[in-house]
Image 1: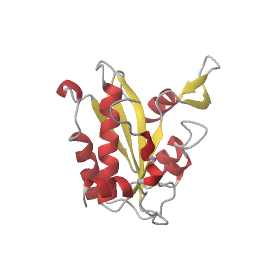
Image 2: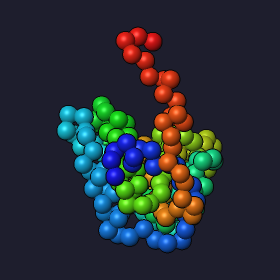
Image 3: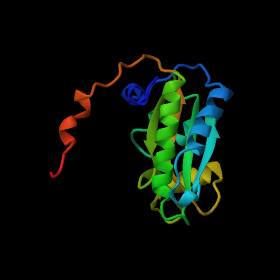
Length: 179
C-alpha cells in the first residue's frame, strides 16, 4: 500500500473484537516506532507494551473521557519521552504516527489516546486530582525522568471503516505563497 493510501485508511478505531493482537504484529508496530525520526538522533522515546486486560481496564481511568476504548482493546502501547530531551514530545508524536501507519498496514485498528496535559479523576494525597501521567506512572510503575505523551490502543476492528477522502481532510487549509 502506498503512503497516501495508508494515511487515508488510518482512522481512529474505538471498538475492537476480542481477538488478541499477535506478538509478531506488536513487535512490528514497536519496531516502526523505534525507526521513527528522532531529534538530534537522541532516541528519547520509550515504549511499554501492555496486553494484560486488567491493566488495560485500569488504564482506561487515566482521564475521564475519550479513553473507554482501552477497556476492550486487546493491547496498547504507552508512548513516553525522556524529559531531558528538548524534543521528547515531537519524537514521541512521530513514533506514534509511525506505529499507527504500521497498524493500518497490518490490518489492525488503532486510536491515539492523549495523555499529556490531561487529568485523572483519582485524587492524590493532597486532595488534588492526579495528572493522567501521575495516574499511569503509579499504575505501571514508570521510572522517573519519563513523561507519557499518549497511549496507542490496538486491536482488530469490529467494523471496517472506509478510507477518508481528500475532501474530508479539508484541502482548503493549504496555502501557497502566503495565507
